[in-house]
Length: 68
Image (cartoon, rainbow, N blue to C red; front, side, top):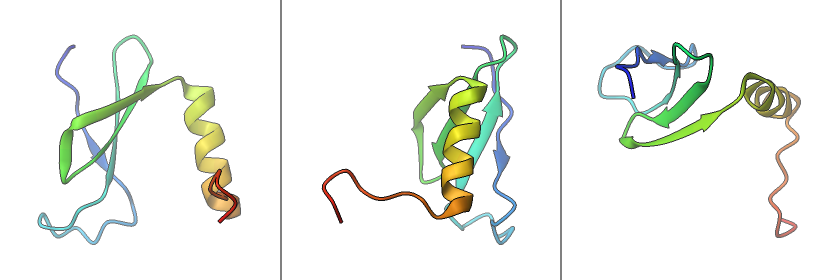
């Protein structure tokens, strides 16, 4: 995998010791997500999938699958 340039969430406090979600775009157009405190665990998804995830987050529509 080519070197990715990670961008922190705009909700991050800017403190380098704060954990947050980071996003990177690969040259092939795929997007990658990771949690800054687990940088080796990277999720790869298409742009439509990330767009759908962000839409659900913004709408507050993230019910867990076990009914909670």
